[in-house]
Length: 173
Image (tube, rainbow, N blue to C red; front, side):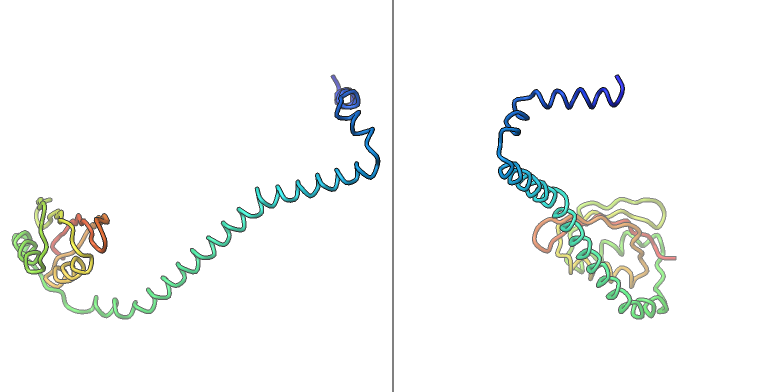
């Protein structure tokens, strides 16, 4: 069936339908009101289904962008401190003493080591029981001061201000 034949068939079907017959019997003023109401409802539907979600997403993207911009500015302001820290001489640690240094410094900081695995010469994997995040940072800083480098860190939130830490440590150098 050709395109014109199809459209003529649909038009003929529409004209015979009860809805089309009811539409034809309405006064012109009522038909105009129904068309206006239909256009209004379509606009409201378009706004609710498309425009409003897009605006929410754009607003969320702007907020995330501003948050990232603030983080970038903070990191830029702290860069001179970090660069200066790299210029300081680092302590060197004998790889054979790594495990002893880790357990001793953890005990000094009040941390409980749940598991300590050797990962080769001069490397260990440490799992800690839940610890205050600030306390963990102090311990990491103390380790770095003794010549230990954090290669990987996995942190899971345990409870308010406490984390479960899994760290891969290696002798710096």
